Image 1 (cartoon, rainbow, N blue to C red):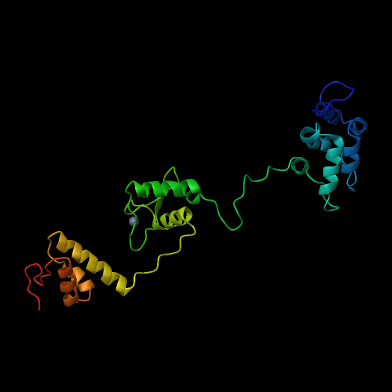
Image 2: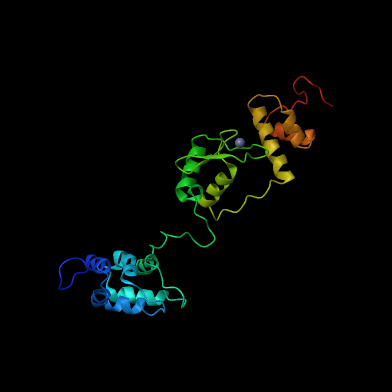
Length: 233
Ligand SMILES: [Zn+2]
């Protein structure tokens, strides 16, 4: 708000001078601005100052004049009052830009990843629709849910896991030996529990019944080839 020795806002007095078609008074009240706006060939009339006076009348005149000169790109056109105002009051910078190249969407925030992992811990299943549904629902925590099956969207789940443990390398795929060892251990466990050997485990072990029988014997367990009543060679 700019007041000088006269009473009232400068904008009000300027507008009154415009309405009174009193160019001398406009120039008296607003010298620097009139000089800046007067640097174009086409003369401005008092009425032409009205939009400038109404928007810019209460800004410091020297600042307005500087902004006008800063916007004077062509000899043909004076900058519009709104353009001058925008130069004086540039829009606030965007709040907290994410790192370059990373789009910060509601579904890839830390809060969303935490919510995804919470859901998974609480028993939410991961969507395995094939093909993946193009439709996802996002809840208020930023968690994506497959519209087709209602389970967690797998891409976001993977990202959440990656976010939770970014340094953990991908576990290597189990080797054939790993699978055999696992199947053998599982089979032994079944025998200890007094269960029948599992045909699937036997298959995973490569059908190595002799090894299995020896191994079972070391635990005092009997490995019978009779599986599910089906006698095998
Ligand atoms: Zn699904």
